[in-house]
Length: 188
Length: 188
Image 1 (tube, rainbow over the protein chains, first blue to last red):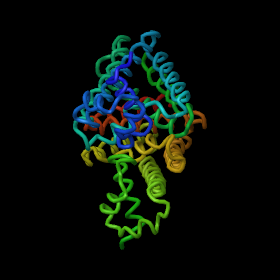
Image 2 (tube, each protein chain N blue to C red; image 1 turned 180 degrees about the vertical axis):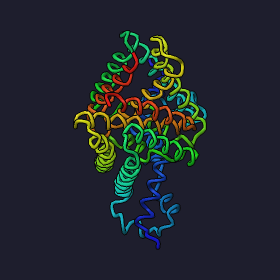
Image 3 (spheres, rainbow over the protein chains, first blue to last red; image 1 turned 135 degrees about the vertical axis):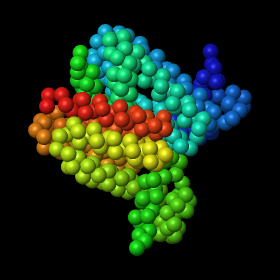
Image 4 (tube, rainbow over the protein chains, first blue to last red; image 1 turned 120 degrees about the vertical axis):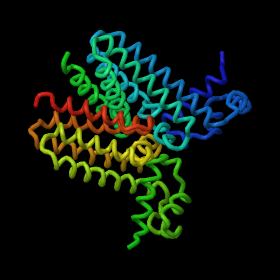
């Protein structure tokens, strides 16, 4: 069953992931999604800024869900985070370095340029940080420790994806995986 | 003494830092730099891709120089990196979240879309990683340890800048500073 609204959001996420917000045009979204042009204005009357905001929120939700599912499979947070980062390295390699970090470029481009998209990026990153924080809290970390570590994990993974895509190699993410495991093993 | 070539590169770096590569147009570069339009084509006959590549290389060189200078001021690498990240938090706050991470958006936007800009981003990030690696080597880390840590430091700082700009707060970078100090204190 085709769902034009969903198709438009998924296409927008993939295009922004590959080439950023400003590099992605409405015509390209219509062409790649296969959705009729009229449906774009029907579902998103406010245009590109609205589409991008909703695509960002959906990326955030999906990413947080995936993090929760992957981390739940392994009890020890240090090993769980390590293995999750290795899985991202594999995903980035499999995409031939066009995917990974769907929020990074759009968040940087719009941090001071679009209140609406910036608000969506905050909500998305807060979802992602919360997924890591919950895992750390469940293993007995204090609120303050879990918060600091969750922010650093999110930051290092985002930066690791950036370096892996730039160098066309999963190695930077694998280095991040190793270091995060060491960081999360302190005081265990 | 005005230097149109230098003015064009600095303006391009600042604009790409704020809004990315695709969000920055040649007309805006001319207007903001104050350089005559003819000088843009004189110094950069290949156009926007050439200007962006050279701006990226210059940002990388300047950033690596700043890292070396800041890290040289404190002997202990854990404290030196911690204090350097706090200085970035201050810089991002002082810019009202429009500055910090001059390479991030452009590197993501062009990773698979422009060979020329991608090559410049690799060189720039290699310069930056090398600056951290040298500090770690000087304090007695092995090549492999220094390499892994330098990649993770670079990734966490890039991601921390992304989160600080997104949340309009220096706090994510301060959390990264604390965690990197802990990571760099392991095995000392």
